[in-house]
Amino acid sequence: MSFEILKEKYGELTEYVIQETATNNRCVIVPELGGIARQLSLRKDNTLFSLLKTPGTPSELLEDTKSAGELLFPFASRIPEGKYHFLGKEYQLAQNDNENAIHGLVRKHAFNLEEQVVEADQAYIKLSYALREKEGYPFSVDFSVKYTLNISGVFSLTYEAKNVGSEPCPVMFGWHPYFVLGNEDVDAWKINIPSDTIVVFDNRMSPIDTAAFVVEEGAMPLFKKALDNAFVVKSKTDKVVTELISERQHVTLQIEQETGNGKFNYLVVYTPPARDCIAIEPLTANVNAFNNGEGLNILSPGNTISGTINLKLV
Image 1 (cartoon, one colour):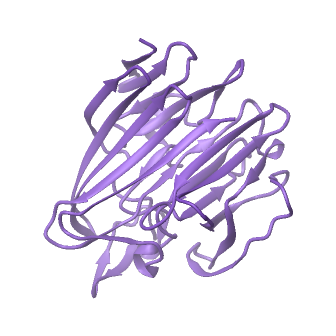
Image 2 (tube, rainbow, N blue to C red):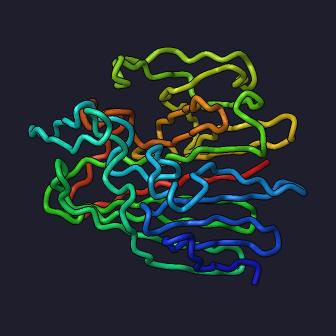
Image 3 (cartoon, rainbow, N blue to C red):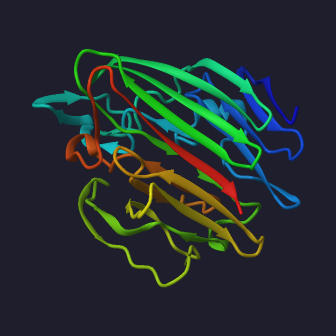
């Protein structure tokens, strides 16, 4: 069979490797560390590209504070002072980023392995986490993520959240990968961002407005350009694609996100100071959506919401 799933040790951690033997396309998932994708390699022609930048050792991965590959739920990005209001009540989240709350409540937590399936044209694993009445978030949500690698060379991440409590709850999901393309750095690449609207932040990186995002025709060069911005995506269909382009290597990474009601209608792009990678983060809501409500999904008891992100090389 072309696909296989291997269970391996990575230091004290246990990880699962989904791979296609014919192409060596593979992804490596660590359930006990927030269900993160630690590694993703996809082939373009004769070259196998390693696409995710994550800490290089098990101990560094455990100690990582940059959220490499992390699943951000039930909120992403910063909530100033960890305070938010929902349906007439005030809530106080734990402050885990100076005076702010950042990137949700499932990071670094152990996920359960629900399924591992190998088929002729794909393989996938599904992980779950039962989010139960955390500090400042007194709601009960069953959260799951499914990682799939298929015969067309597409890697997919699908999340699902179900309100299993008795009250409505606010939910937002984001994925926080840092991407690389070969041994090049950010200055060698171009990017196509599917947006004409940029979010304007205050000095606490919280939205206060939007403005026009205008790029000359064609992809935007990243040479000497520093980005730490959120965008409202623009879509005429039910999907949009962000493209990270290496012209020298003749390869483009396409990050496709579902759009429309309740889907991934926002995007964050960040170039770290080292300029050795770029974060491209699909989000279902705007930064600080727990307060501004922009894109925020409100789940009624018993209701479920989901969305998919697809990656491929062209």
